[in-house]
Length: 248
Picture 1: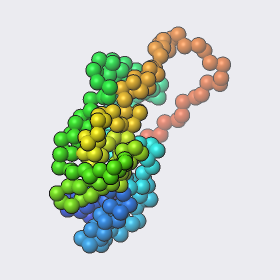
Picture 2 (picture 1 turned 60 degrees about the vertical axis):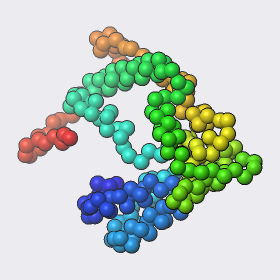
Picture 3 (picture 1 turned 180 degrees about the vertical axis):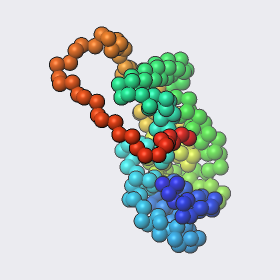
Picture 4 (picture 1 turned 45 degrees about the vertical axis):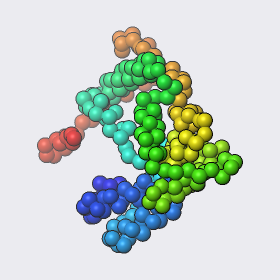
């Protein structure tokens, strides 16, 4: 989305405003970020208004059911780089190479997580540890039952409900991980922030998912013969000009 945006609206200021709009976790924050963008550059704001529905690219419109706040395509980029050489191969060779890469990756990730000593993975643990450090800037006020009003010196303020694992900035609901404000409230109790995360962030569920391994297969020489009609190769057509390959 940003690549298309910067073609007509370049510059670091507009880039920052666009990402502020995208990262907004509530509709109110989204409207505020969009208003700031409109005041700075009305044409850039019109581009945002014509973009696909924000449920596809803005956290404020994400469903809390999926517990995912990913807004970039970083997942597909490493996979494409791994199969870069195999992409020029025939389809069966390509699939075979992709299968071998995935089989090796699943085995390595499962072995690494099995050796890891904590109940959550290293990335999740680092996120929580970083947020614990940041939480010292926030000051919770208890309501006597299960709610906290959390403030910071800049007068930002959020309401936290530990029983429902929710609060007004919605990050906990969207990602399944308590944010800085929630952790400030959790520290007032006997609970461990590392144990206040969604179920699927735990190591035990990770290992359960990675138990679904890819089975080894024999070479093509030992494959059973198919009784279906054999397809002829398509006729090749040479396009005019020199062939081009896009590599980044």
